[in-house]
Length: 429
Image (tube, rainbow, N blue to C red):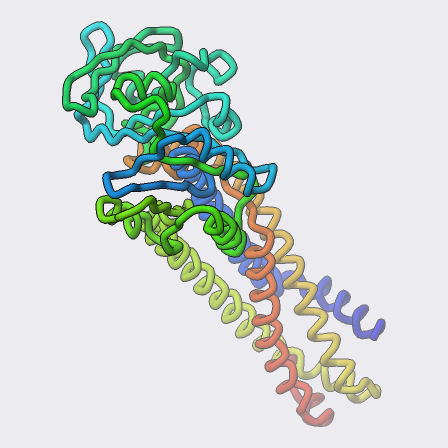
């Protein structure tokens, strides 16, 4: 075994010019594959982070009495829910006002329409909102009793900065126009579907402006911080809460509950996991993963075909050498081990070099600003791609490349060592 390994090392060094092209194929194929995985993982991670802020956490609890989404005595219900969940769960009441561009912000004659206004308590959601990338200001400088957080495009449109006071115009529950002055607390960088026309305002200010009852909220959000909940954990929390509240069946799409909010005859609750809010986005994620998978498969096939076919030619040129090994008494098994170890060293060197190159490419991709691409900001952090190294997927790709290519090499090697020594010696390299 040791002699076979030494023989493989000697052969690689002696024939380094022949193996250079195989090494480069493996290197660049592995690098592009791993870099593609990192980019897609980083884009999806950024998307989910923004969605988590927008929807308030890992899952949302909604309630309807048949007249829309409304939770009365929300403080009492929030405390009861908190007692049922683990201590690391952060709960917060919210009011989501779907402005549908019937609400506007004004500052010194400039107007900015709003799509969604979210009433939040800063003290309850500070941990969640801290993952925002702020263009100006910070959460530590925000007055929790009088604030509105604006997206960078809206702040630019109004030409406002933190500390400026803007006027919010909206309709009350009675359909009357109302205005309220509120101070800009901070400006966050987001021009995606989850932020451009969305503002976050003090919970009580929005409630008063809309003329909601004192004890009113329209959802309770549950956030577990940086921890990602599995589907099993979500179902466990759903079952736990269902023992105390009248929950509708677990939904995979938010509309399955919200479309029925006017048809319930008694208090009914909906358990809405984050994924249920992202049905359309998940289609895009699947398409992205499908494209990345196709690219990786094609690159892997190229590596297998390139190394396998080239190695077969190299083996055929070494028939005379193999015959000499046989003639001096070297067993076929030892020759096969030497050839396999030779290709394994080549693959390991290529894959490890590809891994190093992919890390370099990931660092380079952090530099360009891609925010100029329309609607692409949802995949970016501060305008940049943020590749995220996925250990499991990367290991699976490298193992696939090594194992599949080794199989092709073994096939070629087995054919070469079946030749008789006298015939092998008659061949010329």
